[in-house]
Length: 146
Image (cartoon, rainbow, N blue to C red; front, side, top):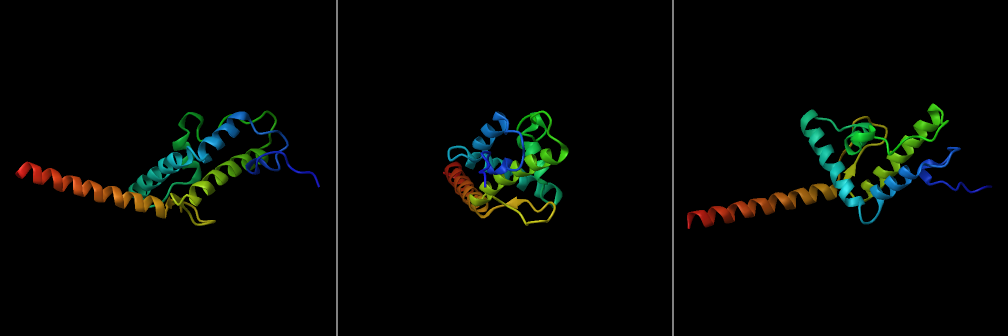
């Protein structure tokens, strides 16, 4: 049995993944940068839920994060058919968001449309930030009244 040399999110596609896709996957999931990207995703999800009452789709999330390329990490290799393109996009987005879910910044329900939501870690950070803001506001009021 031959081992597939491509990343797991590109498995089953005959052409090698484009360098832009590989680079962006590393950017989205790397130890130094994943938290920042996951936080950006969670903020967009929270804003969308607040505005519409439902979470964004994965497509809408990535279109927000990658506006210059309509949510794609880069161009497809020449000659990919529709099914290979779908597999590439789904695999890429799925594995990126799995990493962000592992970090507890986002979450979703499997097989449920528009179920993207913020994760436990995002909610904890948000509460801490709101508490810090509240304490800073109280300090300002004390200073002003003195």
